[in-house]
Length: 342
Ligand SMILES: [Zn+2]
Figure 1 (cartoon, protein in one colour):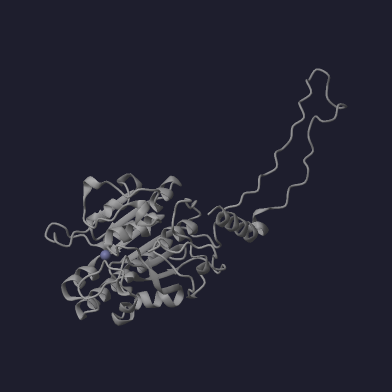
Figure 2 (figure 1 turned 135 degrees about the vertical axis):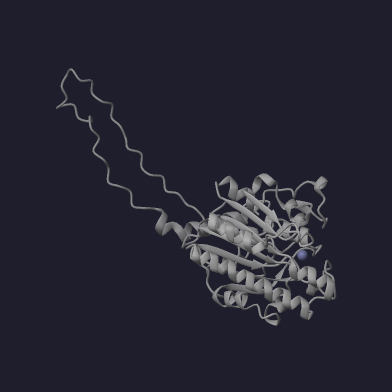
């Protein structure tokens, strides 16, 4: 672990050394350092030194990412993207870096997997293995990406399709949190995309947006069923509206966007270690991202780590995720952690 941090630090130092160490200013003339021209009635000012600026090194990739948007399509298998003709996601993939072989955690269930995605750790550390909204269980353990962002004074938001995702982070860690209850349509006329667009209009630094529909339909009609693919296509159109809102508000260029999922599925279920359940898409586009297919083995915990890296936030040592440096055009980190070890 220590070796990995040292290597990373050295690497970032080397990368940034040519821009962070500005030439030192010439020595300043110090008034009062000579004794000749000062009237005797005036006490001679003490010699002073102008402190030289201390060079600082920050792990911020260039160009700067102003904000990060993480979008999760619940239950989205990578092969559903093309099958469902998710044109906005596919266009986004062509412009960004991606892998269709990222891996989620066990159990491959919505709440534990989203927790690993946003807390940056395996379930053994965040302890969220339950998959219902159980308020008495409290919240995931550990420092999550929202904690980091808020500690840095950033505006954080979560717009989700399931109330249980509240248990990923404490209410105090999100400036805005709202969930859409699909079973309560009469009272609730808001939608995930409308709430997300409102946050875009108001300005955010870190936002997580969760579309629940594909998973809900999958449990009814099956994974990769015609009905499920139709749900993902509709979600893709809503994702398109979010992209439009970013552009209309002049925020698109500075926004790092990660598209991913919590798990896949088979038959009408998920939760096992089958590849159909464990394999998820991971797509990133934004400032400094080099387009192309990634050779890095990406894990869902890397979403938190990559988001922190993009925002210039310190990555907690206990995190099991690692920034996907390859997406930024950097070499694959040979000390990458290898999943949660099952
Ligand atoms: Zn799910």
